[in-house]
Image (tube, rainbow, N blue to C red; front, side, top):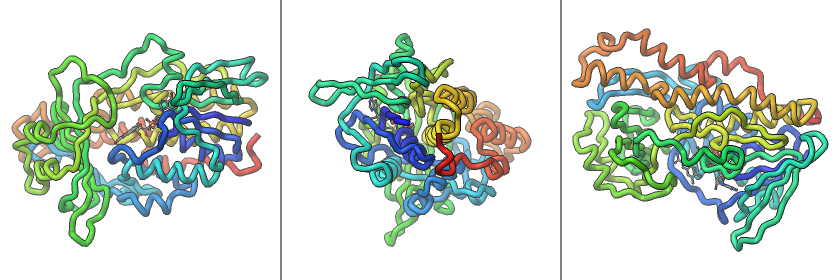
Length: 425
Ligand SMILES: Cc1cc2nc3c(=O)[nH]c(=O)nc-3n(C[C@H](O)[C@H](O)[C@H](O)COP(=O)(O)OP(=O)(O)OC[C@H]3O[C@@H](n4cnc5c(N)ncnc54)[C@H](O)[C@@H]3O)c2cc1C
């Protein structure tokens, strides 16, 4: 079986590795950028994604550069704790939760793809669009037009084409031409990293604030000899603008604007202004997602990752869900009776879950407790139990884990998506 993947982001690269592990080795990736560079800042890999990467043989490397999260805490704007829960191994999962630099993860995946699938497996400076189906998924083939930087183009064919070309997917646009730009919710995200003293136990992720203004921080490194750690932060602010402009991950922002918005944010356990002030560079990104769509698969082509289900970066699920898509698709292609059946199994397994997360994230997902605390006690509280009873807070956290597929016992007990080599069709 020959597979073409359009896009070499987290989703596309993990798909290539998952196919190879399942015994499908005729795999080629086409990526529009001319050079894959370690772009982005921090992302979180939840235990359900760490499991998949571990089963792909990357557990040791992740351990080498990821910080294993111990705790997730939600607080109000005054730094008072609303909800705090153990995470990863501390929560009883068989796999850790890691905070990693997105670029570092992407480079690990790229290098492993080149090592396992060969130096020719990734074509850079090659944009894919105009996917065509020739015959049925079983008897025919699919082809995609590849356009190079000089404007020249050619077509390549495969049994299956996977569009992992991100939130601005050209392949998705072909099937949903009326869709337009991603949907913005009015929040601007200012993202950066800073070398500062670690906070709390040095492995905790915190989210402070509410639906109007929020500060998220988590470590991307343990402290070095100088006692400083790299802290990833996201400062969010509700904008009055009608339109966010471009939705690029790499637009620079003026640090003074961010500092001004967070001028009075100083908790006795976290100095928000010092973190923002120490940032080397601050990147601006609008909080956008896309409406769930009714269909991902068209003949022998299917969508994956952000191309299929771009969601708000709430609940740390964007990259994690792309990784699970990749493993589910490879398992289905290796073990189904036909390509059509495999793509249907993949879509049936993944679409309901990612749709539920996308919609839940629109009402703040697990962060809903922060908004409840703000609405019920805008000036702060002495005892959170009198504001939001424990059972209500626990139910919000549990509901999100259920929707996203990471209830500890269920994840620990779920059979692996790995396929024995030789089982593949
Ligand atoms: C540069 C960049 C920085 C990011 N930074 C962060 C971050 O700091 N924090 C965070 O939480 N998330 C970040 N993300 C998003 C996050 O990586 C994704 O939400 C998640 O990992 C899902 O991955 P994906 O592979 O579906 O999409 P992406 O990671 O977006 O990958 C899509 C890939 O497809 C390529 N591509 C696009 N169009 C075409 C085309 N027509 N033909 C061929 N290739 C194409 C893109 O160049 C990209 O490499 C970033 C994404 C990018 C591209």
